[in-house]
Image (cartoon, rainbow, N blue to C red; front, side, top):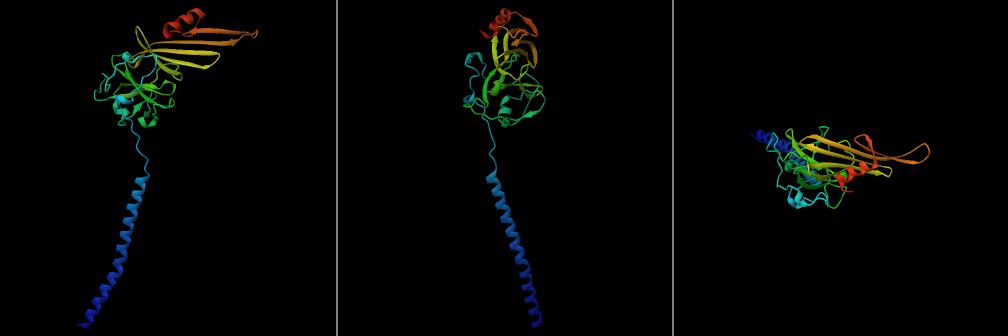
Length: 244
């Protein structure tokens, strides 16, 4: 009987010796994992969020007065998906798609009202003359505008000269998109694009450039839609659209 008690005591001590290190090891792993998780949370980059409100809507141009714009709290197109709006993109809920079909998220653009190399949320205006307002996004080279069709938000810079500076002009027959390339001293180029929904209804391309002839003299050539015209006709057409 005495021997059995001794054996029981030895067995209890053996169990304590085996179990205690295991418990200490498990406790240490749990603490390490919790500490690592907290460290990762502390080092996470903040999620960039752009608030879509009237407070950060700025005029597109000093030449265009505010009363020419149609302002809404939210712009929704008359296309298939009536629940889709520009606010969905600007709040980061969904992507928009460029002309090549690639996704772009609002966090891909840097927003700063005081920096002209960054983007700003502009006015809502029926740029494509379809009866529904588009969301103007001001930014480098004039930015772009957002339009809703094909059940998605689209990033739009239509036209031949889409690498030029983009702006908008209003004529009696509606709004036109204007691209300007004045980056060279010996030439200028203008691309006037009139949209009807997602399609180009009319486009006029004007260029003026200087060349050196065989006698070493400078000649200036004027073109409208790839057809050479006189200086007078070129300047008149330019004045009709631009006022200068």
